Every structure is written in structure tokens, then in C-alpha cells.
Length: 396
Image (cartoon, rainbow, N blue to C red):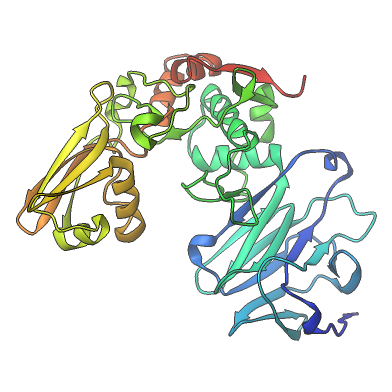
């Protein structure tokens, strides 16, 4: 029987929907919060349980609102959150990031929740663990909470989809775990730790029977450290032939990021690319008219350090990565693929020509794959790209 209690919306600053079913053996594990599906800017979602276990819906983990297996519909409409369960709904006037609506397995159930999130007309993706749904500025914010080790598996197989070499996957799982445990603040102003796209790490949820969890068992708990601190070991898809230092790319020093020669990614499909961008659009992003352009290249790595635009004696300087990010954010991430590029003024366009894909820092994934195929083990792969780092097991 559906039970739906009348709740005064005046007492609710915000609604967070949480789906949680936890087995007894993972209660003590470290959990991580990952913002999911934000690129779709969802204003409506449907949450569907993938098990026969009923959902226990509570307000702030206290008052029971509903128990059953019905789909949960959540909509953001004109400043209101509309919640529908079993055809019965209620509207709430809400603001951002406070009170919560919690959905879990009834007491005594040990199975982990598996559920799908559907954004009508766009996509459906499967997740496990716990789900929070919050109101953002003008959309719903979705947060998947999962045990850290499960997050490591999901991210590893999301980033390495199609890769099967055990040593490659093991090496990358250590990188992923280190990134999650390093304490790096990727989203200091958001109610989650990481997002599910390339700003942080790809996280596609519970993909259908891709790899067995035991594949990563050998390196479970292992992290990369520098001076006894867990580091965020950055990585890129392909570096284009040589990785760079963080000081060159970001203007900040991470001593564990050492530029290394990487001839292994020469066969990458992203090794050669070019793009023509309208001059007026780039001028808008640069904040200046452009009559001339010059590149300041890092001599050690060949990566762009600065881009200098000139206009009637005025000079505007942007870091190479800063320009790439601006172009990606406004014109599309398929334009300037890496921080290794040249720029030429051609009529009313700027011609970008480059190599590689990503920021060109840390571990080159294409190069790592080549090393694994050459017989290198996970420790040798990591030592190649992070020679100053030490592998440690946090479970010891």
C-alpha cells in the first residue's frame, strides 16, 4: 500500500532525494560523492529500482513517506520540486542544498541498490549505492554515492573501455584511487567531490558486465605517494610525444609531475589534428581584438606555455591551457584537443594545428597501453610516468 504523508513545504529549504541500500560488509568502507549527468542539465528524472527490494523513503532519515517499488518521478518546475510516487505527487518550494528526502532499503536488507536514472527523451543510465537529488540554480543536481573501491572500478572501466590488458588496468586503477583519496578539491562550491566527465574522471555507472571486479584485486588499496602524501596523479588521453610540467601548463608546481619523453603515443588517432575557428569568436574569448598571434612554447616538452595576441600595440597574454579551456567550454571540446598546438592567422580565421589529446600532464593513457603491450607491469608503467612517486598500500 502506498503511504504518502502531507509535508508542509514551508519547513523545507530544499529537497534531496537519496537512494541507499548497503550490505553489511561495506558499512565501514570509505564512500565518495560523484555528481552525475550534469552535462544534461536535467529538469526531470525518473528513478527506477532494478531489484525487488522495496524503497524506504524518508524525510531527513526520519519520517517515513513511502515504501514500495514504484518509479520515482522528480521534476523542477518554476522554482518548485515536484515529486511523484505511484501516481501521487506533491510540490515543494525549495532553495539550494539543505533538507533531504532519503530513499533506502528497509531495515534488515543487505543487498546493494541497483537503479536506473532516466532523463526523459535523452538517456538512461544504471547506478548502484546511493542517490541524492538536489535543486540547483535552474536544474536538478544528481549525486551518486558509492564505496570508494567500487568507484575506482567504475572509473577505471569507464576511462579504459575496451582495454583488457591486466597490467594497464591495474596501473590505472592506482591512479584513479590516488586521485579520489588525494583530497584535491575539484568542486569546492558543489555538494559533491567529483563530477562524471573529463573535468574530473569519466564515470559511466554500472556498465553491463564489462569486467569482473576481481581483475583489479591485485592492486586494491594501492595509491601513489610523494613525501608520504597521497598525490593526485593527473593523466591525459595522449600527450603527443612528451609530457609537460604543471608549472608550464597551469602555472603551479606539482613536484611529482615530471616531464618525460613518450614516443609510444605516436600512433594515436589524436596525434595529428587541426581546426579552423572564426577570428571573431576567438577575439571574444580572448577579450581583445587580434591582429597578430605568437606562441611561447616550453622548450623541454614542446607544449604551449603562453599565447600572445597583439592589436595596435596592445598585448593580451593567455596561458595555452587557459585558451584551450575557454575554446572547449564555449565552442566545443572537439576543436583544440590538447595543449600542444600552433596558431596561424588565416583570413578571418585562426588555424590551430596540434598533436595529442588532453592537458599533456602526468600519465599518457595511450603510451601506457603501449607499454603494457610491451610486457611492462603496473609498477613499471607508473614509475615511467611518475618517477618521483612511490606506490603504497593503504590497506596494510
